[in-house]
Image (cartoon, rainbow, N blue to C red; front, top):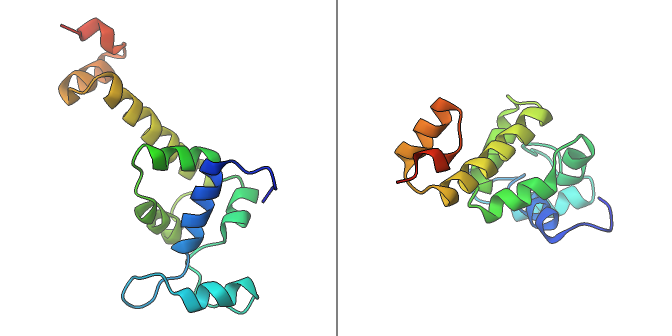
Length: 127
């Protein structure tokens, strides 16, 4: 990773690396985490955060999504399943941020849903 990493990206990287190795109980396997630093770890669920970033994962956006309430543990499970490309993962994060910003702008989910269906802004439906 670059040395000019933001706090958001650093937080996202830390948490991705935290959930990269899990034991049989689903807890972080600290031994495997340490061994991986020396290229001796086995059983990684996905690439390390540096490799994910190099492949295009937007750690800055992921870190921002975490401040909006994104469950990084659940997101790491999505990465581990390997069903989505990096572009799709970035899209999921972007949609999460947009949805949480919409929720701040309009707390009523019915109004948000109607505005989304109609393809217009929330202000049109405000009382």
